[in-house]
Length: 348
Figure 1 (spheres, rainbow, N blue to C red):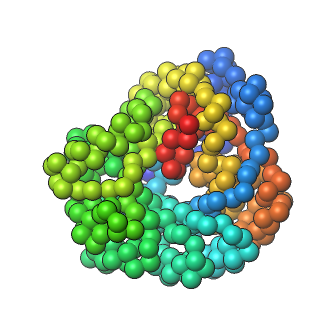
Figure 2 (cartoon, helix red, strand yellow):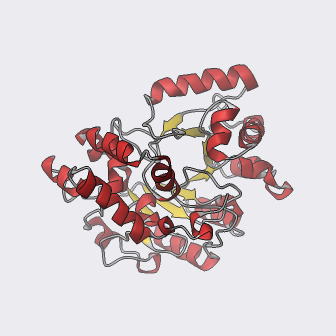
């Protein structure tokens, strides 16, 4: 399976994605645009609160090509953050008291300067969170020591596992992914991750495998914990249930499978003002592989830069960013539906 960009899909173009989103919601379904829905609840324009997370995408290269990927990541994606841009991120971080740095990709570990970056962030006494796809740990011998590296630097590991069975996981992420994910989880457990009182946090992420919203997070967490421990002896800390947003490859799946209109209607109908008030873009600043600044990772993939004079990490200005209105569009319905969705799971 190729990325949308490699296959020449129209949906590889962010402007085309935004056109498709608007046409379906406003012109076909005759539903209110997202900004109007927010205005009805007194939340527009949406404003940031004190930043708690600097989320940095260090590249779109990945060893997997997942069907739901909003990054359109894969082995054929060569966009990668340079060490010079990483240094700009460190310089910006040193100006702030942002407590958490969230490293994502692609597979962030494939960036050749990934380990250096983790070490330098740690020197600034910030919590480092890595979004690890698990299979990267067993993909090549040079990654086999990642669990020990993560442990040495107190990295919090967040890993996607669509389900606790092979069929549903492999259907979304590729053949053999479940088996490799189990191997990697056992390696993480072996060095202490997820173990009681170890202080080494291992969280899992659940994304639905189809055109539906996730069930209650607490119930899913208990199901995953029972099944993974019973079948493999695996333990972990928390499970985050994340709604698939209609962006990039998941949008392509919705269109190709004929589920697009129905899915968007579900998201809009399930709009929750409480979830809308707690969306992750309010306390997160997202940095692209090239240093561009965004309100969230989804806006980043749609090329929706922050509405601020500070649009690149080299020009990072915390005061200016604090005054910005958050950029919203139709895909934002995914974060405000039901119990809400963020990189840390439900919000309401």
